[in-house]
Image (tube, rainbow, N blue to C red):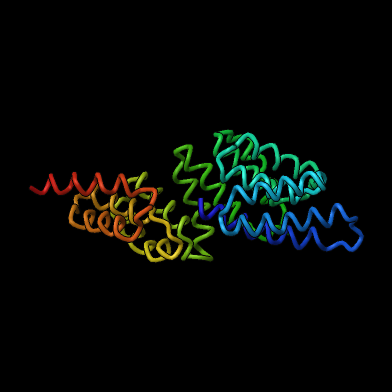
Length: 257
C-alpha cells in the first residue's frame, strides 16, 4: 500500500503544479486549486478524512478538473472504496484522455477488483505512451496483475525491469522473492528477502521480514525463521504481519521442545 501511496503522492504534487499553471482561471478555479493543495497536504500526512473533505470541496468548485478527480480516486482507493475510486479515476480519464497516470491508477483499482482484462487494456495504453515518466509504476502494476493470477514467471519479467534500474525498491524486491518462492526457488527467495529487509525497514514495511521468515521455515531453517519473526515483532509493533508472526513464534518454539 505504501508503494502505491508514494507513487500517488508524487502525482498529486505534480498535478497541483499543472493545475495551477494557467493564469486565466476564474476565482472558483483558484479556490478549487487551493482546496486541492490543502487536500494533497493532508494526503501526504496520511490524514485521509481531511484530505477527502478538502478534495470534495474542490470538486464542488471545479468539477471539470481531472486532477481533482484523480486525487479523489486516490483517497477512495486508500479507504478501500474501490467502486468510488473507479468512478473518479474514470472521470479523470474522460475529462483528459491523455492523462496517462490516471489510466495507470485506474488499472491498479481494476487489479484489486480482479477485473484483469480491463486492467490489461489500460496498462497497454500506459506503456504505449513513450512520454510517460512513471513507467516503473506501470511495470509493478503489470507484475501485480500476473502475480494475483498465479502467473509468477510473467510477474518476474516485469519486476526484473524495475530491479535492473533500482535494486532498493522494497515492494519490488518482496514480490520478486515471493514469485521465486512460488516457483520452488525458496532458498534463493530467502537470500533475496535478507537483502530486502534493509530497504523495507526504511519504509516501515514488514513484508520482507515476514516472507523471509516463511521462506526459511519452508526450507527447514527454523532458527533463522524464528529470528526473523522475533525481529519483526520488535521492529514493527504495529506491522500488518505482527499477529501472524507472533503465532509462528509460538509454533516454532513448541516444535523445538
